[in-house]
Image (cartoon, rainbow, N blue to C red; front, side):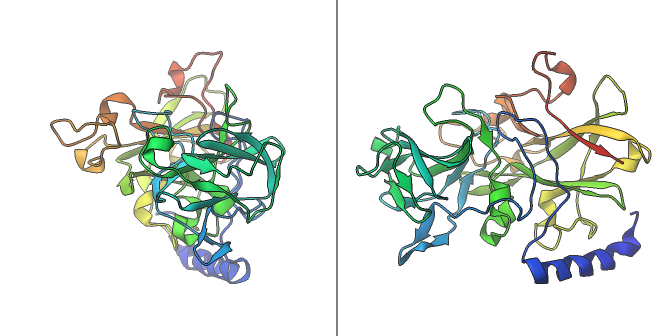
Length: 348
């Protein structure tokens, strides 16, 4: 492994950084506005949000329920991919806004709050407070409703769905944003990585390694992704090529002291490009490609096949980073010119 002699230095520098700042930053990536993600900065320059769940003794104290399903998770039912994060919360549990703002939409079991310019916090499967109306101002610790029963939440299993959109929840087109960068200091949610299916890219400019996290929560069961691919174009190449990423075990990834190493994936970009070349890239993470043991827990409405795996394996078992389209193809060469695949760019 290249640059292994720098591992101790990386580790010490990283730990020193933590002692001052309390969390890690990574190289920032930005890309065009998309269907789910519009930015991928993972550092404290982003405003950090509170949890929609609070302590039973203090509305100002966030608690962090278990994640049932991640944002951008591949699945065969409902929105595909999943357009938000599901939290395990019981009926009648109070729900709070995650940031101060203005009520932008209120429906029977849906609610949204304008928290930033053109960004709304959306909440589904709750009963909004009857005292709240559109255009009402909310402070960050204000309650907005309670978790609804299946009979009153659209017919779904009891839980809270929350996310960040660029439009009101009742609009015909809603673009969903990443959640993880807003919770990078929360260990309960794996420093934000539990909230988005493929998350937290980091490029090590010394070793030329690219790291990313890729795994799924499925009704509360963690599932490793069985395969993660880097699709790329080098320089002026006109077609997309593909390379396999490996599970990361290297201290040159600054997330390794935190993230379970089985959930981080890496690739040495020197194997596909030379120093100074520009690479366009995106990542595809797959559920249950090599073995049904990766996907033995079925979501509501899914059935097991003979091998014990869920029907999602026959429907749509991959996710893209950056994400944009509903049920996207994994192969960038198959995208129509009018709706091209979204990608990142970096220089080796």
